[in-house]
Image 1: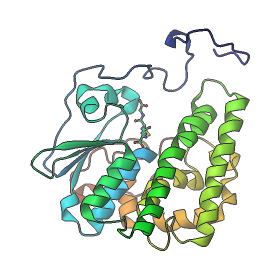
Image 2: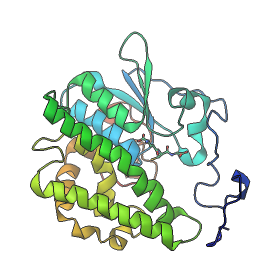
Image 3: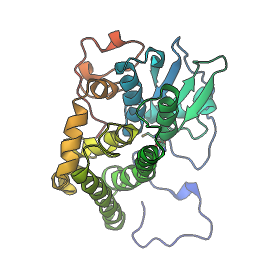
Length: 290
Ligand SMILES: N[C@@H](CCC(=O)N[C@@H](CS)C(=O)NCC(=O)O)C(=O)O
């Protein structure tokens, strides 16, 4: 177990690391750990993911494109179970050397290519279909600013606050204070912006909202990291709450949130998505694992 008065040795070694929820999969090395091909379907886009906040950015984007009439955005979504280490299979590492979901294979043209990192995936799709990302330079810069802000802020919320508050083997005051402070500050940035603006980048729903919603919504809805909503007084952020409620009601968002969801009530799970018919009989409620 870690010691509150830990003195770092001259050279760090992974052998001394204590437990925690992801201790079985975490290693200080990259690369494939086992041979495992990925399944490939017929649609232009092949998504390999899981319905965590980072994964849901991609599935909301794809469902929004389909909802907007872009038939060329049809996709197959395959579940990568990160708890079982499937992100370290050779096929997945081939499309994401960073071994994290989501990863996309674009086979819409003659030569398939990979896109990894959730921010890169949604920007790639937006550019391909000319959707949710304005072309006017000022408007585009505002959208991309909020997208990159999210990608940069997410690890403080997840890897920082979520890890130490919910997943670490023991509760340590210093990191919980550090990341609770930062998570609240991030919420306040969004809240102040949304006090003046219907959506994050202005009057229009854009990639800025698609990137940020999956991380902010679970806190206002109270279904992430145990009782984090209470602990962080998330109800203070009224404008974020108003924005979450509006976006959560969008049909594409409701669908996107259950794609690759393999926890919760059976009728809210959709392990694989290959067509609109897969949503029939499903209850479109959501939420990442607590
Ligand atoms: N910056 C990456 C982060 C992706 C990420 O952290 N994915 C997590 C799930 S939300 C994951 O795959 N973790 C598996 C692991 O760390 O081994 C992105 O935005 O795509």
